[in-house]
Amino acid sequence: MQISKILNNNVVITEKDQAEVVAMGRGLAFGKKIGDDIAVDKIEKCYTLQGDESSRIDELLAGIPDEIFVITDKVITLAKEKIPGKINDSLFLSLADHINATQLRASDGFVIKNFLLWDIKRFFPTEFSIGKKAVADIAKKFDLPHLLDTDDEAGFIAMHIVNSELGRGNSSASELTKLMEEMLTIVKYSLKVAINEEDIFFQRFVTHLKFFSERVLLDDGTTLPNSDDSLFEMIVERFPESYETTLKIVGFLNKTRGYQVSKDEQTYLTIHLARIVPQTT
Image (spheres, rainbow, N blue to C red):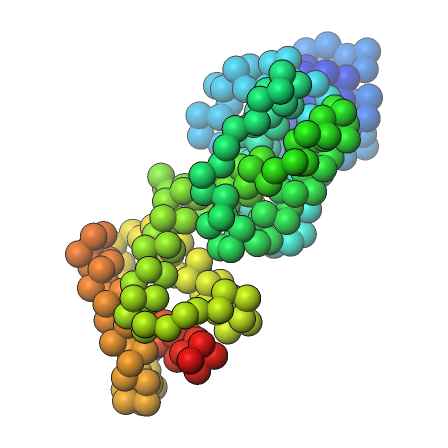
């Protein structure tokens, strides 16, 4: 592996399997120049770049201090631990750029309001908790205690993580949040109950709704097969009120997005809704 770009003494760009890679390691580029071989035993972390990211390396990473790369790597490492198998390496570039811009704005006394914060907190609590830890690290490293006065920045970092989870297509955290809010509104008005959002059954429903919403947003035109008609019919008969709400969601998705909700998906939605009702009446 040879150095193609040097970002600082600890971060370089190289190539592996015909893809550009951000390689990190203490003193990795010390005394080195472009074209020199990398000491593989010094590489501590690698992030593989995809698509048009390679052409944006200079634009996104130019002038970013090493401390930002360290914090970014720490955030991604924690995210991969908490959300295994879903975090894309492309998060490194966008998150490093975002965190650097955040600390520059905060140094000048500016903090941007996050208008999706309330939804982010309730829909993506794991990602939000990671964002909180990241903000604490930024505030400590750059002596910006006022960053801790609000949760806005933690929400923005959480959105970057959610975007990485989506992984492909043009879907984004804001789209996912909007879709989940739309379906929750249908649920609340249809069931006509005061939902306790701290209840474990509601939290499980939100988790299911998140994954279901991801499938809707990433829809490639195919529909999940209907595997068990007998189970579907039993659930419909047993929980008619909840199934009526499911049908409203089905109609909404078909009308607004052309998404065909399979019987399996209807079954799982109905079961989750049925668990909410007795806990909120």
